[in-house]
Length: 471
Image 1 (spheres, rainbow, N blue to C red):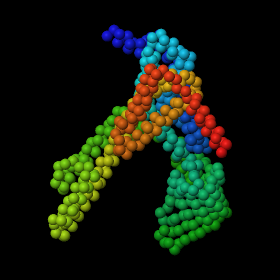
Image 2 (image 1 turned 135 degrees about the vertical axis):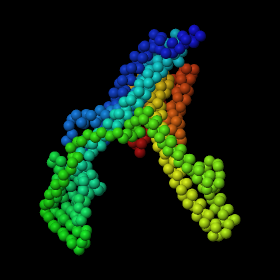
Image 3 (image 1 turned 180 degrees about the horizontal axis):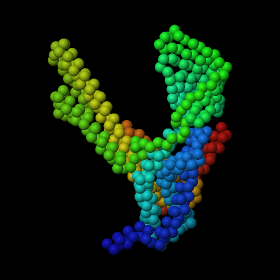
Image 4 (image 1 turned 90 degrees about the horizontal axis):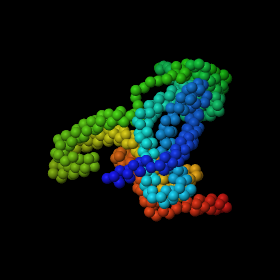
């Protein structure tokens, strides 16, 4: 018992070398968070720049927009930072033969791995708190602010080749656009139910003055048709025409909304929704079973495919055993029952999709944080076997494993939303698979004690690239 307690203490990081490993982990961890967050934030800013520029937004609003979206970026960057930190820390220790010295002094590889696992566990606990208590509110506020920014100055959201209906009572089509200058415009006025007004113009430009959108149109025609008397038609040519459209929501209006999406809810909120949709689904299944028992004379619980087979069999029996008229009457009744049951099954499936959608997000709030521990199990033995503590090797391997993880995660989420697999397996399969890989790597590093040389892989890539250039 005493020996077991001593092993637990040593594994938990109470031995003197553990503090040294913790220090080795901290710097690359925070450095990686900074780098990954900067890259993702820059990419997000590039994609969002068209929604921010030209809106006349105060600097505080732009800063708040970026600040609110920083939450989901950090949620992605922290697990990757754990993987990079593990690779760099243990790779540096192996490169300088410090791992060898520790093992020569009688410290097992699992004990050396202990501080990394504890570090990953602490980060995972923080991430569970972050995903449940901080991220939902940030996502909710970011969505509301993004919608408010989009609705500000709708005249600037005109896209060539598409009808724009953001401006009240008007539908606008523009073939070409360069800045505020427009070519080949078509404007349909919908503010009157008695007169249909259509305006065509060769060119023009749009600007915003306070709460008003101003269209200056050149070389065009105005067509007016009296909808009550179709013979009353008027056409007016113009060289220059000005349209002033008052819009109430041009100024940035901040909304409050109680409605939240699945990624804007805490675990408690989503569990309430799961209970609600489960009750509704069970009611539908109850109605289906009663209908099956009453109309199909069976107490067997049927799914949609089995139900179709039973109904098809009864149709054939009716055609065989009954007269033509009676068979048609019975089969018409069966067709009506089949249509109704099919609709009920579709409704039940839609409720199940809602249940799965929330269940996936609940599992995700635990599975992604748990990935921090999994990435330590991967990164530490890989770092020891590669004996490379540099950022290049760590970043390359991290990107490979991180992309693999997210491909499985996103694919699992899609399959769960389509009710093909359960939410549990959708969210935890990537962790299970990578944990198995990590367990093998730990075994390999513990007993084989071989060095994995990735330099050959890089040389192959260089050779291939030279061949491609020559071609």
